[in-house]
Picture 1 (tube, rainbow, N blue to C red):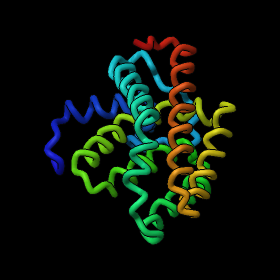
Picture 2 (cartoon, rainbow, N blue to C red):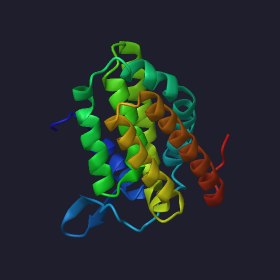
Picture 3 (cartoon, one colour):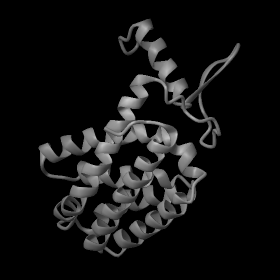
Length: 195
């Protein structure tokens, strides 16, 4: 009622979140957010999950190709105080070992700070597509690529603290390329067709 959503839509959404292993249903209690270290793998048979994961992979490619120039364009005119929110978020990701959130966080920060409404909208849409990749976090946390993400988070934090915008932009682009390569390989491994 609060959001004006029908019960059917709510049931489908809860079912989708359950298939993604983002929520768990406990008899007699209800539906709860799954713990970060939930070992259950998503149900990739769901067509909406497959479609959205493929869109997420394409968003990674687009970010990898464009984020270097975009980051330099948006971040270069900013002063040191403007980077505090990003520094804080990156520190939180490192503290919580949530390295898989780093690239999306940086993209969102860039989009939110762009003077261009068009860039803000594009970054927002890409950000939301990238969030579908969180269905893969169980794989990421158990794979050697996690150390790559960890190093990237630490590197991005150092670059932004030192206001090395060019270095930050290059490292962010490399991170997106790594994410795309790993995700594409993972899709093939779990039987998702990349079209």
